[in-house]
Image 1: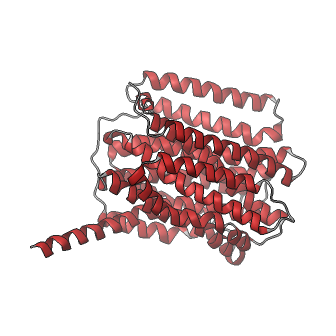
Image 2: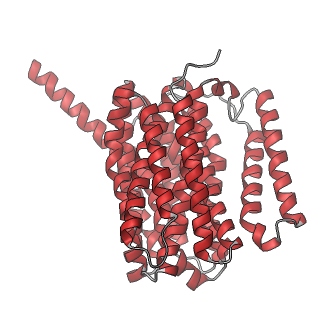
Length: 461
């Protein structure tokens, strides 16, 4: 009898591991796509043309749509069930990836990147909701999130290397075809092994809030990315900034009055959730901004090939693939505040070291900076996810996961926009890179202080 019970537990654990693999592969594609594109930008530029702002749009068309729709996708996850949203996102990524490999203009590529953002927005809150329901115990859930983050971290590690090899050998179009077999495997595992979550059919959609969120994010991103082209004092750019401010103000008013708000404002009574959203914004400003600027530095300034540039990025990526498993264990024992505080401080130190890098600098300084940065990010992201999910009522996990990841993707958009804006405004690429990295280091240090002061604090009455 005891032997049967042990075997049953083993089977249950095996089934959960298969389930976790299928879910993780979905988000694996989201991150793989981000890092693969970063090393392909110079080649895309040489073949399809366009300037710095066009390359920013290739990256940010994805993150803008991702950030804008994550909030509604979290609501749809609660309303229709996480499995439906996850499968739908996979199918959309399958189709959009195939089309992206066939486009012939920079505009068409930007458009398909936006479509890929819709699929990514569906996958992320759905995957976190599925994990939260499959692992109800907080300690077990923290370990599962660590594995999830590690599997997705492998995408960050593999993306620059695999992408560089593909770009150099088969061309940049091959990086999008890489999504197809991964999406099919994830789709099969999900269809067979994942059960649908409880649905809340009464949950309404906040259409006005969704439209205002997208308008605000697009207007702000447009102003930051096109400011150098039009001039910062031009009516077009001033109008875009004004539209962003007006959209943000109207969004808060609409959310406060809505019966079914996109962002339930009462959730911000939790300091951990508020800090988690702010931390998500800051850590992705650093991650995405550096992934945008450093591969360009390696290829344009140091003359490295795409695959060599990908290998040079590995010291940043490897900790993000390995360390999240250990971070999950730390969170399950000590809570998220300590790893978040230390993680931000490490990322800030690594970014500060990169400020001293130039064309003649020894690679050892770059390696040290990238290692500290990757280690810090690998401590921070799983911890902030656990902090937000643990501080949220179970029936609103989908909404909360949409909020935190929307904040992260907005940070990704701002990071790329900030880096491109500063580089375009300075007299040389290196000068702009150093200035933007110094600003990023200061922001990450602020994230460390924020984590220490707010994460794990009692909910406001």
